[in-house]
Amino acid sequence: MSSEPGTAPGRDTTSAKGLTVLVAGAGSASGTAVCQALDAAGAKVVAVGRDAARLENALFGPNNADLRTCDLADAGEVAALASDMQESYGGIDGLIHLVGGWRAGAGITTQSEEDWDFLETNILGTLRNVSRSFYDQLAASPNGRLAIVSATAVDTPTAGGAGYAAAKAAADAWVRAIAAGFRRAQSGRRENPEPQRSAAVVFVVKSLVDDGQRRSSPERTFKGATDVADLAGAVVRLFGQEAGDINGQRIYLTG
Image (cartoon, rainbow, N blue to C red):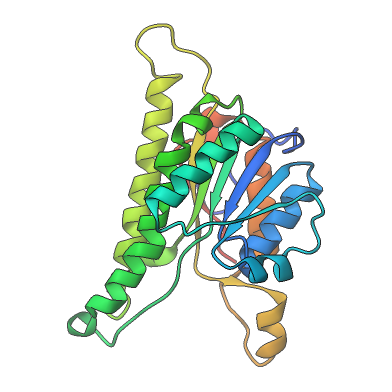
């Protein structure tokens, strides 16, 4: 099901304080904003990226962050990371997937195999790896949350952006399937159902923008773009909303 454009429904009376939240793609501008917001909300942030130097440069602010390097496209490395999180923290409570990328052509016939391999690996492959490895931890958490950032291109794809929209649509479907799994194992269980405690959601944006982009392109209006700070606030709010209200939702954060 889908929510109306805006914030997700449900209560917003608690924070992420005391929870362990893994942010995949933490070295990006959006990753930095999300890590900082979660840290300010009292979460234990595990910031994951491929480049250790980039992580350190981006996340010198949150003193609470546990910086981890991992190739999220490598299922073996991700499985090892999940095992380490179980041993170090007793599992994670949140997984925020911010790995992606953009490739486009001039039309359908110019959608190259190289571009598709890039999009499939970064948008879908990394998501499949982390969600499979951390699924049980999120399902066991009393406040498990998984979120990705999708795009309005899924709703209105163009010929030039066919590969990008298709990869995003696949990731979108994958997350809603995770939501179905959470529901079936908890509130939707045939015998002895229990209150829904885990939720998987999709944030939908046209594009993301940060202060660095605004400074480098002061002539641009970035119409319809969502500020990374607004995304970060929406991520924190997930942990204060009822899992049953948000599980499986596509939450529009369009500017």
